Image (tube, rainbow, N blue to C red):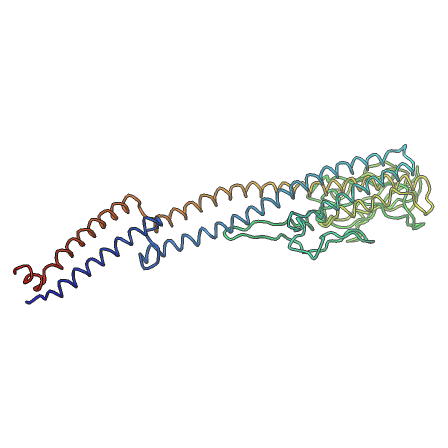
Length: 411
């Protein structure tokens, strides 16, 4: 087979170019620190690196949502703590208003003090974070979630919580409707209240306490009316189940007497008059702390309508008893929400650590797929540099091996 001189030159130049390209690639890898610059360098490793990068980006987005949730939940937990302090002050003011030595003017002062604390409580319920999001706005509202109007405080929003996150879901808000208006009223099992006097239609002259449960198994969940007939010492009482029409208890009545029926125990005090009625009803989970306070404030202020001293005293005692009972229920509900927020904060801290570990895992996978082993890279560069120099020397020798060069050197 005949090999032309031109073919030898061509092969030598091609080899020289390949060596030069390989040397350039090694130099670029050493400069960038990347073994895989484009997908064509190593399709499999490039795909692994791409998936790892995408996963790391999701972790970053998740971490941003997590940090926002931590900030909001920390602010919400602090707000709920402040609310608890205010409600303790309100409770003390209510108890003072029930002091038998207080007159209308003193009770009005207590009512004004409670009004101020109630307004502070409303401001806490409308707390915003630094970006203007209402912490107790639930799933969103067009403005402040709690609006104070002539008929009291209403909720202007959607119950629930706003959530965000790529990998996990994190709460951005707290369910304000449940927090401030979702307490279980009464003592949790039933609700006692003063009715009206059946003879006059006016207020009663006695008051009923919150009651206790004597036998949970016999509770019916029905509505009851307790009626007082006659005056002491000949007064009697009758308990009527207004749901079924039955009369589970009746008998002689003495003020301060404890009545028991269908697993319920309750005491009526004061000086109940002939025709006074009291009610017992099942509890509901929609007691608003603002409604409780508004009713108490209105009842503690001097009344325009004429009342006997017994009726006024009974109204105050009933107001204090019921308000303290329902305020305690609201406080318990808010403390429960605060505890839940605290648990969420603890979980968020755990997720912070998990996200950091997951990001490191993805970064390691991406690095393993595309980063250059510097020791190996330097070794490869040195070998390719040596090979390139050898190729240059070979070309220098080959280019002198033409027929014309031989003839010229032979003369």
